[in-house]
Image (cartoon, rainbow, N blue to C red):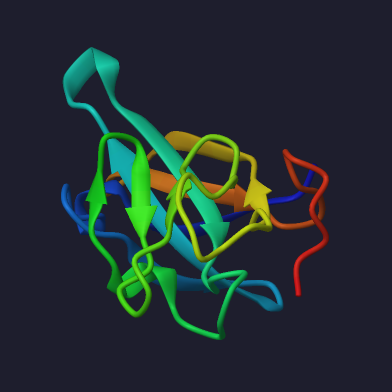
Length: 119
C-alpha cells in the first residue's frame, strides 16, 4: 500500500466532507463520530449519478449526500442508499497517523476497498 498524506485531521469538518487531491484522484474525506469512536473515510469525490462533487454535500449518519439530486452514499461501502444514484463510488483505505503537527489523514489511492474502479 502506498499511503499519501491528504490533510490534517483538524481540517475535516464534522458535517461535510473535505475535497483533497491524492495522486490522480479528487477525494472526499469525511469523518463520523468523535473521540474513541471517530472514523475517517475517503471516497471518490464524484457522484456516480452525475458529475457532481460529493464533498459539497452534507455528511450525517455515516453517509454523504449529493447536493444536486439528493442521493446519499454510505461512507464505509460507497453504496448509494437512495435514488437516483444506483452505482457505488470508489472508497479508499485511510489511516490516521500522528505527524509532528498533530493527527493527519493518509489515503492509499492505489487500491479501493470496495472494488470499484475510480472514474
